[in-house]
Image 1 (cartoon, one colour):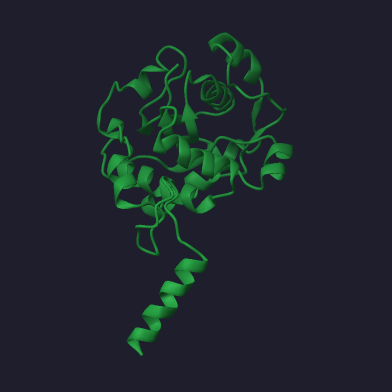
Image 2 (cartoon, helix red, strand yellow):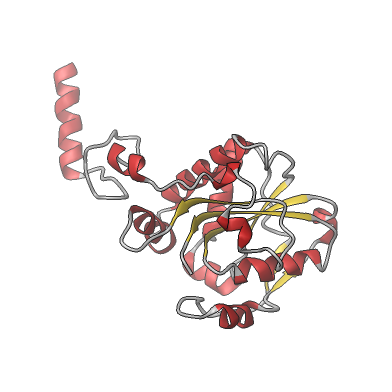
Length: 233
């Protein structure tokens, strides 16, 4: 009987191989999304444990942030880039949730994010979200929430106009592209809370800056930030 189960399992794996999301290897447990090699090479930053880290410095003088964290360093042709591409453009919400859990573990083990009341994903424009089928920042928030038990609020803020991609824009162009894009719909839901704004990748911080300023100009809150990755400017 055990032999038959093993043969059946091998046949299923041959017909429907379970591959690592990072490198495509089939040397991983059937319940894992990444192989041991990819897990061991993920470039964690450790920013959650250090004040004045590079993610926080992005917002100095631009947005009052209590704490900021990016889970990974981003570089081209890396495992991080592959995972983000799978997550954002290939409908792989499972890897997004898993990466959110990794962020959540870092936040939970740090004493710098203990007072967070609510997770706020960076909103997508409604047409963009319908086209993609989901908001990747909201998926990250679901993973973070699964670890930290902090609730997610996707209703109180919106992106009220379409904005072009920030890729290949300089800092000024990025700011002009997103200025005035965000709005608080429900002030009472946010009033007096410590909010964690969540996005996938931060480069110049222009989008999160515009989002954060739209919130603090509308309601009295404390802000912190968490992103999946920090990309070079």
